[in-house]
Image (cartoon, rainbow, N blue to C red; front, top):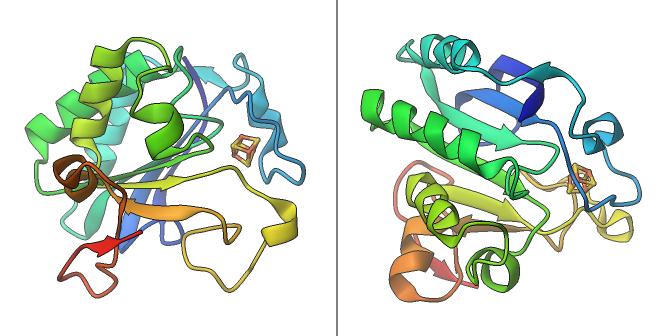
Length: 183
Ligand code: SF4
């Protein structure tokens, strides 16, 4: 896997101050995509253990609330193994930090059925996620007033609650407490 950028002070892609990793490679090709250069799987730098160590160090300060994965497409089959390996290390070291991911794939129609590569890897990937913002960016539904989303079709999903319920439960922990809303 390659990655485009790492930000260590991102306040736009999840609650609180976060580290964000923009991976390379995306097959969705949404018109109006905010990050077209990252469609190419070879864009950017190779993602190595040194990169993981950098991210682990960036996550260390107490004011960093967690990690957000964006792209590109984190759920492309060729991107999942490296991300799962990194998340395993992060959750081992910082179990209290939240993990958010953005995907153009749909949680219930694309990701859960296990069509995206090795189902065991996808399952492990989901086990590390607190929130998934899913759905492609749709230019006609673009809304700059939306928090954490580019277009109104995208859903902010509470992943542990959805896995437990067997249906999509929307995240509503806007104040840092309470969770769960059927979607
Ligand atoms: S899923 Fe995201 S990165 Fe991929 S084309 Fe759509 S907006 Fe761009």
